[in-house]
Length: 297
Length: 297
Image (cartoon, rainbow over all chains, first blue to last red; front, side, top):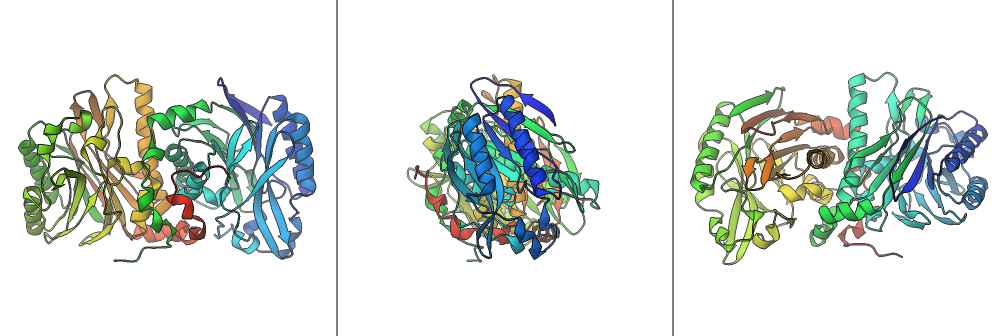
């Protein structure tokens, strides 16, 4: 894998692993473990894998046989990552296909601290259903809500892919003190789509996540899949936005890559003190956000 | 004033009036009325003025004598605009400094339909206080909440300036069926600030408003002041984003300008059917958005 790096002082170093996946889950796991090892050597402190990294993005079709890809949490994968986290003193965010019970599956991410402890898991709250992205067939919507976790290197939150389009998800994660929100993702272009549509979609995707950084004064780290699978070309371009919404690092659209980004968490103080949005929220007037639609009065 | 235009079929035509203001409220009013006349001739159907267009941006200091600029609503200004709206069959969105009662003032925008009827008023909900923007001294926070109004040419919402940084404001306006959210604004660069900071601030401002268009599948129209006043250089660059977040028109950073933009409201159907975010909101999990901060559990 190629690497790129943005250097800053007084910071936590993220390692975002953008990879291609094959039909062999064990091979994907081995690749992820190898990439984590590489990231550790480059002093990454919080390492995040992409959504459903253990498999191809199987949600492009509705096929019950894919349920066999799911696993228990804690289970075989978390045991591997816990061991690495403990011995290498790194935080690992591992997105997994969770089998919670017979017939109940979630799209989940596990947060493992630098001592190997599982701090918690996030179960994807917003589930898409779109041609090529039939996730409502596979995943029960999350029932744990939004969270943040105190890791050795900072307080982090995790949301997953489709969540990134919902300002509510970012806000509720930030209100719990998250300093960085990670978005493990699998998003791409249909191979038959017009280039102009592709450009517009990518722009919207990056823009809406930058806006979460701005509105909340936090770092946002998106970790996307890359490479072609069936009719999708996953667009990579994993990136980090700082609390002013500036993109401070962006991976390529084509290649496997580990994106190393040093994030100065003191920047959150600076930006929030200059742009005090959290001071001025009108919490007395937000009650109707729990409505689907507000019909005409 | 120079003009620019983006043409589309099956659309409502917006006329966004970006102007410089002088110390003479009557001169500013005359300029606004003249610009509206010009916009009507160019077939604008919904015309929006900038925040506090009747005066200089007086909130750069705390001076009680500025309260004399405030007026009743309905009052002298709305009478003028109602007459124009009725005779020229245009919708007018007029931001005014409202004197509601002795000692109670609001930063308000009035929505006047194409028959001259006042459909309602929006009182700025989020009030900034920042060096050069001492609005908490002047404006009582709005108590009418967020609204949308059925005008002859479409259902519109209005938020004002600082509101634009709050995804909650855009969401609550969109959930009431607004097809276009107008943001009358007065935002600028301090004349002593570094250019790099200015670029970052403008980028964040445009990005966060584009994200409201994306997250809600609506048009967003920002109408900003231009020109230097005291230590501020208002940055103009009024713009419209379509429901995919694309900027379809943008005014200059220097000049007075009427920005004409044809908005195809059917685009809202198209985008929302492709990006069904409103379908998938987790309204069961958003209750904590009414909290200031969620302390550690």
